[in-house]
Each structure stands twice: as C-alpha cells, then as structure tokens.
Image (cartoon, rainbow, N blue to C red; front, side, top):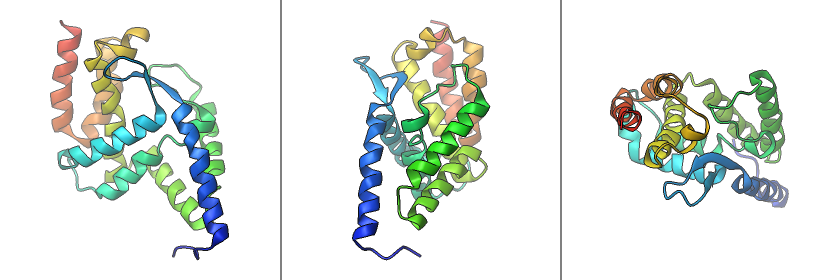
Length: 196
C-alpha cells in the first residue's frame, strides 16, 4: 500500500532523486563504444534498461520485464557510496558486500519507508540472482560490458590483461543462465576478438 502523498513524502522523494544524481559521477572501467571516454554508472544503468527492453524475448525463462528494468535502474545506486568494482579487479568481497549493504540502507532509506523498502528488496533480489527476473537482469549486467569490450577492441580487458579463458569463466555462466542463445552468439564474438 503506497504511503499517503503529502509534502513530506515528496520531500523525501526529491531528496533521493537529488542524491542519486551522484551516480553520474561514478566512472566505470568500460569505455563508451566510440572510445571518447569511460561510461558512468548512471549511463550503464540506463543502457541496461534498454538492453532488457530490447532483448526481453531472449530470456530462457518467463520474466516480468517491468521488474527486470526496475532492478537494472537501481542495481548500481549503491556505487554512490561503495564505488564501482569491475569483475576483473581483485577486491575483498566481504568488505565490499558490507559497504554495499550500508549504502543500500542509507540511499533507499532516504525514500518514504514503503517505497525505500520495495527498492531495497529489489536490489537484494538482484544481488542474490535466484529469481528468473534477477537471473536475466544479472545476465544483461554481464553482457553489456562484454559487448563494449568487443566493440572497442578489448577496452578494459586490455587494461586488466584479461585472457579468453577468463572471459569465458567470468561472463559465460552468468550470461548463459539468463539466455543460452545470447551466450552462444556472444562467445563467438569473443572468440573472434581473441583469435584475430
């Protein structure tokens, strides 16, 4: 049940919307396809929402596309506080998870309670990647940077000295869990990149 719309509710919603503007300043490792600069996390989230909209029929399982898009729009909001940590970077996973949970509590806590709890639950669902919606959302989150790396002749793979085998290991199971068809196609692109 939505909370009653009043000035206090709107104040909280505006505070959240102002705060998440900071996501535009979180710079990722992935370059834009035109190689002019690195993308920011807000651009990444928008692009993933478009991936979901366009590729929804490629999901191996039945999904609720509205929930998938919501997950993708909020999945990286925690990076405002916790930073972006690409899969090719070595980090202390426990410390990173704690930082992200703390960020989720703070950021979603800016919203009116029911709205904040709804978005935080979606964020946790995305992180757990157990439901059909979350599995497909995670697969797209792994797919988009792969597409960027192939399109930019290696992009962040070159910086991270990433091998063909590492790409298959780090991307393959996550992408194929959401769509075997997509993984079958993109692993050919990856192979072409590494064997050119």
